[in-house]
Image (cartoon, rainbow, N blue to C red; front, side):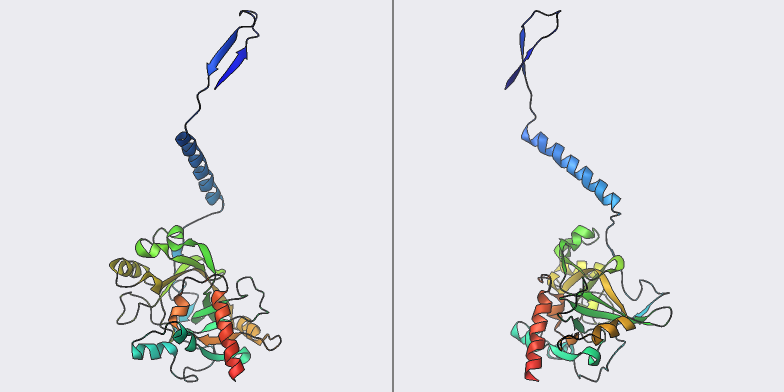
Length: 302
């Protein structure tokens, strides 16, 4: 490809036409230049937004001077009200429910002001809940504690709000087989911290972590131990689920939530199998829909 220039200088011969061969960069060079520019702009954008990799925290130790959290403290109800839990029965039998068996093991713990709220239960939103994080949500209660004024704080994570990222993409410290696990958005509290829930803890488990959360069969923490166990093949990556931030409620906020009713629809408390809690294949509201169907069946039989 050539381009012709006509000289206008009086010092040169008139109407002399010069031809120059234009040199164009090859495709690889163009790609490298574009990639470098995009990378630079991305780094600049992230720095302006104050991006930082997620750090892991645990409810017992994240703010020891301000909050005292427990995996077993009860806010409403009694551990003896509903008898043995699903997870206790699974541990006794040595089997975990799957498919239809798991669906049938969902237990109803009340609704509205009669609902039992304690670590290990799942709170299911009514259709009239319009909070951005809580609408069409299923919230796993992982701890109940007291703040500096001795006020009750209920903490949980939304189970079915996946992000577009893996935990490895957002936290470079998580490597190996667990790095590809989907990162879920647990809520809007937590100062951009991450949390690991899993089913591989306890005396016979391979992951060093806190005590079981209630009777759920779920444990919190032990990220390094979980990575080592997953890479060694001692646990399956599907036994682990990662969350970014969490939900936190005061006693009054919980009371207001569960007091609200519309056409007989209100917040419900359930006990569900650990496989449902740790399922990382959910889209937004998928678990909520499944649990709402079960609640409808239970109410129709009553």
